[in-house]
Image (cartoon, rainbow, N blue to C red; front, side, top):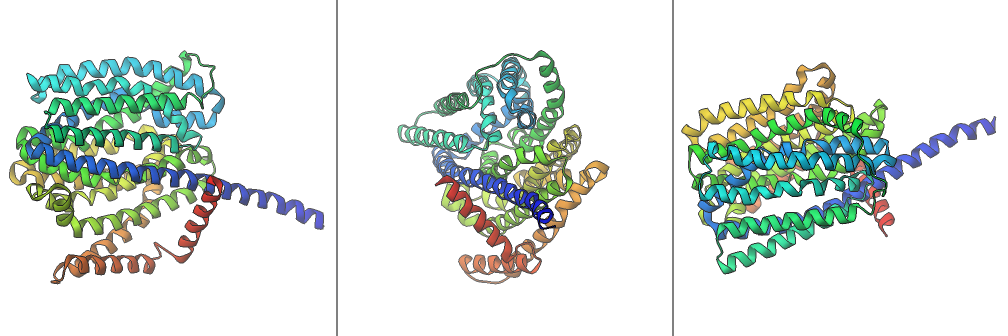
Length: 496
């Protein structure tokens, strides 16, 4: 009987140890990523500040419009291969070399086609003469995309500190270039050339280090190439439509308003989008685990629950801080010439709740092989965004574009997928955390909205009310703090 009890206890113990090991690996990887992304964000923010002050609102608007236009074609160059590769290689680690090689070959043709398509359609978007030459120079970044593909192995093997470190190197070089360009007062073509050089250096480093982790046996698998294309197409199309409502507002402001207005708007966008790196970094650590446990509902739900709760609390906290400090942040970063970006930031930052929410939804759907549904929310979001921009930009200019972004993001990713039976439970699972955290965040801002006090005191009161609300609604508990501390302590021991 004792022997039977011991035999029954052993699998439970090993399962618990396995879960702790996975948790430690994820936290180790996430910690390394967060440190790397934090440094990269710091360098990127510094470069953005120097660039904005150096170029001014009009040239910054032109610079942003060029890359916003090219972003509309990025889906064709990348074609959504990365999440499919992560899922497939996580299940077939021994085939990594051949699967990556097959994808690189296909990507070379796609990137060449993307480059030509972007240039051919450029006159329709108003890029003629010298602007088209600038666009051509910027579009050369498409050519290095295939070289970046082997970098998926960092995520699969949970060694993303490679990618984080390489990103830090890129941002450091970019900051150095921007400082040099501003000191020398060089023109916009040199800024675009400097960005291209940074992209080439980053791609070369990714290729070099990823090759060490992939088997040397590589061959093109024709039958898998077709499968990869078919499975990646919904993600590619989703990316295409998503880019429309992520970047079309900037292209439309370039056409319907002015580059000065776009400069203010893009400054606000750059600040709000900085923080999107954090959910992307964290979910990139969890994605390989989700691919493996997708057939185990209880474990899968546990990971998704934890992700939703953490991201919604983090997103709501970010919204509170940025809404209260928008004016100070814009003055500090960009100077008084960009003060018109402050009210835009207070609107745009709330769209990050939908972005954080969508990060979990997208990874969960890919892990469960539901990527065929991904185009639907993006099509709805894009159509709604374009419609709202057409209506609101002529009347409210950049403020209208900001509201169009917030509304379209929220409708597309936090509500539309409720219409599908296969994703309804997933979205409800997320809304259980999104609704109370958003409500508490809005309440904490409303508490100090009509009270006259210094900005520092208002921020302190609002953040205190928010944190108390999180504990009161059990979005945060003492056990969460203990678990996070234990995981990172274990991760530190692994690193040491």
